[in-house]
Length: 471
Image (tube, rainbow, N blue to C red; front, side, top):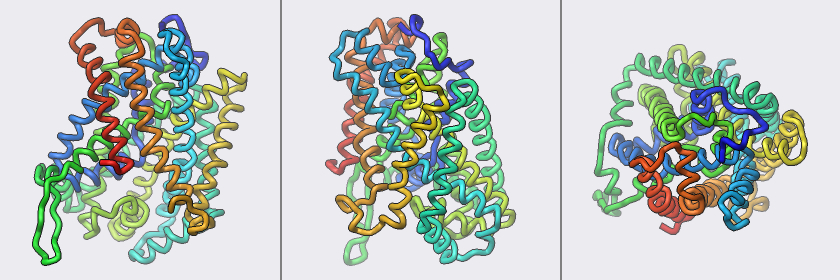
């Protein structure tokens, strides 16, 4: 039982700190760009409603399962699963679930650090006025030259990884807790400042309309022009599948981060209430980001459907042209760095915790080992945009970065989430999960158990099949 175990790493000083840490893990680059974008392209307010339903059916139940597993084991994901396998008299193969989460997080950190380095570089590029009055071609050339210079990308990748290692090396309360106590309030403050600025640009109403106006036609029908120029619409469930997928991925499930953060959670804190607050905060960040970004895009006559290039190639054009754009553009990229940094420290923590527990390393040594290995693996991503971008360096038509991204997002994360749901719903006893959730046989507990046993695994399978192109 969790109260019979205690983490050698310490624990969060309060439920609020755990919530801030988990929100920091969940909030990343995807919240600040991807969610607003897919919302606008798939029905606006109607898509938001469907997304929230998906969160209730897949995100909340699996997050509760991952947290309760972590708190019950009170160790790194690898050792937590080993302990719970013994507690529940389960097949030893279930121990692989912990290894899977740590390995998945390790791969993600290797390329996440590179992209975080890009954001860090753009803080200084924007502050230095690189984009002031720049044309689209000039901004595009700057980005191409930046990622095409391996020594520059490598330097920023290194700086970002060192920033991550320094925080984790200081321990739970001395490093992780202090970091999220600063980073998350600062992130929300920066978002609110950017939203307030967006309200002054004259296109705030258009941005809100893009995000929130319900259009159920876009949710259930896909329209395109045929060869004769006539609009042809057909029924499509694609936006629903997109909502399902994002509901799963947005909460950082399946990579061990939430499990290890759960292991530091105070025993008297409610997992259900904490999870609900985390989900609300995660969604609020995504919506606030949309409220800040799209008025800027529309006020400058830019295209909101610019995809990932919006952050590094489209928004800089807007910031370079608008009043006070240099200042607010710098704030925006600081926001990106904070989001990436808070996620990175959660991703590296499971592997660091395992080294401390199993190999007698101190926090500093363990952080250096894991950080260096992830940094070294990240060289593949660094060179994917320059020295190794050619076809002769590709496998299955993908660069190293593309392979890591595809493997983690489409294979490892969904599998991790699926098996977490199965373990909590089918392998752990009712007594164990009731005890950890502090719910007794309440209606809430019965609803959670039904969802995590039947509905959530089924929906994760659908997400998995959609991600690999089967449906």
